[in-house]
Image 1: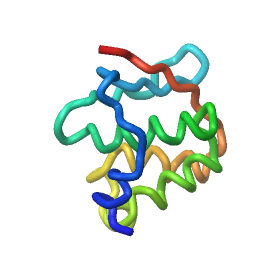
Image 2: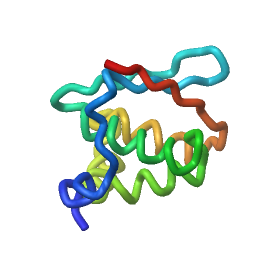
Image 3: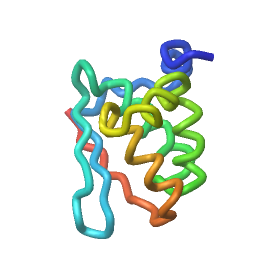
Length: 103
């Protein structure tokens, strides 16, 4: 399945303004629910719903959900920062908490 088709299977995120990733109390990233980032919010939100945090297992699944974009991120580091984060987590193993920011 390609990324667009995968997105259609994930829970909606209309209620979210953003999603924040935390290492303890430290904010790692804030992903806004806006064009260009909404797909990533949807992926990370689905992972959070399934796993309760973003850990190595969630990161591995997230890389599969990003489908063809994962290969592009691996070929061009820095081009897809939200995928780069999952690649790093899959190697590092330190889980992140998720904070949902509602509309």
